[in-house]
Length: 335
Ligand code: TRP
Image 1 (tube, rainbow, N blue to C red):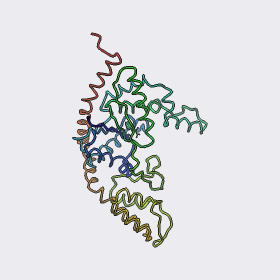
Image 2 (cartoon, rainbow, N blue to C red):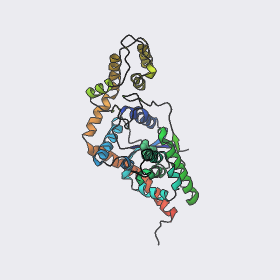
Image 3 (spheres, helix red, strand yellow):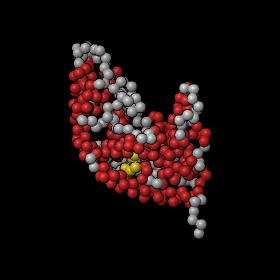
Image 4 (spheres, rainbow, N blue to C red):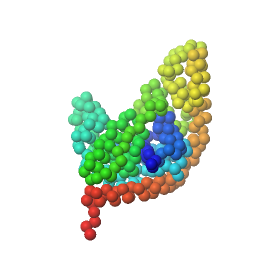
């Protein structure tokens, strides 16, 4: 049996932070190294236009995310790493799928429903500020997935519904035009950590409580010092399991280091000391990658070249796929 194909996209609308690293980037790179899968990772820059109409931000985020994955050791000989907008077959497939997608299915998408609900709560028109991009977002995502016939789609919980929609659309297409698509499955890993941010809520760019992944040492120290703690004094026993400091420690530490820190909390380690140790741990693990990251950020041409090579690899499949699909739907030469 051929290898299972794993595919996931990263929307280019922000700067990678520690939560992205432990929750998505690190496990994806590890899985790709195991050689058990055929991996496709891509920068979802078309998706970013739904959230951000700031061109400089879109470009900068694309550069930062690409440099991050490469700096962390993504082996682009073993995975297919590309930028969505370099694959013109994706928007074409999006249209084929759009014509096979029930509008009623899209009405049920969480992101769209959430936006309508927010409008209603504020007494606005239901459609206020909602673009067709937001409404059709799951179809573009379905095209990303179905284009490469991926089996497994590692995503966060908020994205499960979108993968299920991709599956529905694929089924409908297959039923009407013949078996062209693999039916994809969302894979949610309950073992990966979901980090708390500076304020104790989930670390997320939408809450503005993140610790960016590649800061200078000085800034990293500053951010770690800003993590909210309670008023317990040095010597007072502290609860590790409700502490963001401990939780981030755990995401970076070995089992033994975690057990040791748990004991330190019981012994009443001072918050300042715990944060100092956390800084040393995180900084130590990121220092080498940070150097590579800084180098890459100074060499956009190098990153551009890596992405174009990835796109060539991806397009050797997407060109064939779109040719078959064009034929299937009746878009064919006349003679
Ligand atoms: N929508 C996803 C997110 O915001 C990103 C994404 C785009 C994606 N296309 C995808 C994820 C295809 C998995 C598969 O997180």
